[in-house]
Image (tube, rainbow, N blue to C red; front, side, top):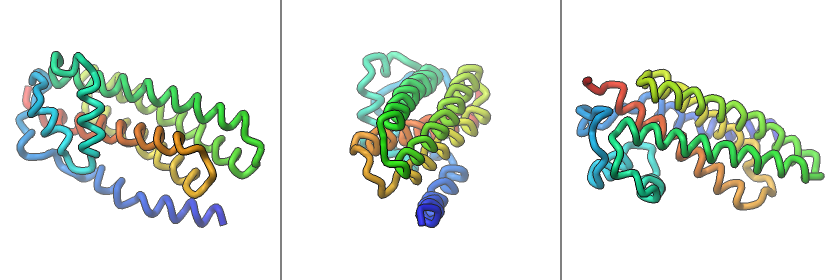
Length: 192
């Protein structure tokens, strides 16, 4: 029964994954370059890209005092760094839940999530390195792998009695991975 639930959940996220992999960058941002200075109107345009949760993106980017002192390359580096930071915090959160959980079925889901977070964090580390060396296509592919891993973790936990903060933090991390990928995609076609 849990397997059928997992399969149903995986198939429910497949359309989003397909959209993420084929969504082209907005034509208004095709002239974006790594050296473009970050301004409020640019942040608004960036956060308005398809699949990005605009409210989350705006709140996240404007919460850092240095956002508007960066160029696009610096912003991409910053979002990967912040995503990586939350990924490791979330991994520790899931490991803690796994250690203290007594219900074997939920413990199994937590262990699966630990593996998915380990894969996701490794992918974000790789993406961060690729992005800093301007290998944007490779960075985008790695960010997509991170997103996929967290989506699997969410599928494992869906319908289970996990604390509410787990769902929230998984959702934050997934949104951050999406932003990482989309921002990097916008630089793939940048003209240097």
